[in-house]
Length: 615
Image (cartoon, helix red, strand yellow):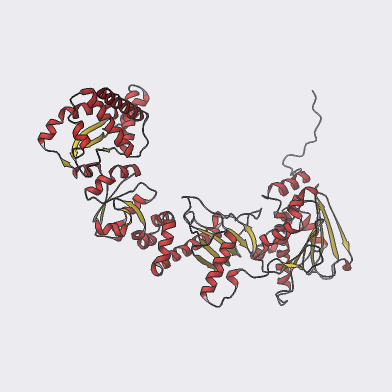
């Protein structure tokens, strides 16, 4: 096979990319955006940018002198503005060059704060619903320039021609789309009106919609943002903001927090959710940029711990991404996130200082969010730690209430450990807090920072055992044979057996066995199984004296007193296994397969013994 001769460029010569314009248009218009509905947002944003530029040319013009008019009758969609317009040169430079901004390159830096986005790429979104885009424009910056018509097609081709001034008597731009048959879902008059209100309800320029039936144009944004309006009293203002939050998010806020960051031109509200949300679940927030809705799922506007609020904000200086559906992560966004977090902290502080009822309702719903904040925020810790609810041996209680009764606070490392010891510790007068939930153990250990008279320590099994009363020597000797059989039966679980007296007497046994101890025993067992191999050497080096579990039998319990007097070895072993199984189930930890098997076997053996005895 002979390859054809290919002319070679001189070494080091520049070459240009071979661009399939049709493919590029398809890529940008169908894959840059999440939904076809964004075409209308892009057209409205371009119109707003044009109005902003026109306002700079004519700053003395009345506030309502320039506006945006939308039209949709089912056959066409039209967006017309009174903006700065385009000359023929502008059309060639900006509409026919993908990626070029409609703001002149040398002025981008100084004008960045005045515009929402980039005209050229945004216009491509129209190919989501139409095969051709028709633009008719006349420049306000160059009044003597003729009107200019641009027709762009989805295959990447376009035509430009100039028209007499009568084709467009006033400066501005009109973009007309003839929707494809498959785009009716997004271009019907009612849908266009709905999308216009959805995206543009907070725009500062007047926007109207005409459905072609001959009636007057319906206002899209008849009122300014609720936080920009004036109200007769603070109470009326508060209720109005809450009603707006309910309309936007679909729930009645527990409270509304006004947000105002003049440095970046941000205003809005944070709505406190009335119910708790799963830990770590982050709600999206509605972010408008210069009045135009950018995103309904902007998680990045607030820190992760602030999942107890949903925000709607309008900002001047936040930077959209290329698709204009999320925020660009930069120093400005980071500073805004920190400032909004500070506003939420300030609201919590005000509630703690002046509205205990609101604080109680807030903590009841969102204590986990506040705990996550308190771990990293000393001010919130000092302010709210005494008021946060915890699970204790006195029931659900605040640390402030608990510390009044218990000057020494013991905290467990897991939920199952707390459940093992709660009843016995309470009867023994010990104050134990369940530290097994997220953040709880760390926060309880910081209680002495707020209450110096209180000491906090991790619950050690030996601490609890020390509060259980020993039995007298005679009782211990009488039970020695039973205890020996019980230890032998439970040796497979690395469990020792002891006899004590403790309250409540209804509890026959207490299983003292921490998660860490079980892990250490499992690791030791694995090391023994791998003895002599490479893993045996590694695990052997890590091996420690594995702590044993301890089954403590309660001599005050009638069932235990009967069990320790059994003189039939097999029955004694079975009863010990049954007591171990019952104590393991009461701990509510996951049972190992061997333990599940033991529980089933001991139950069946005891049942068989009872049946033989009755027969």
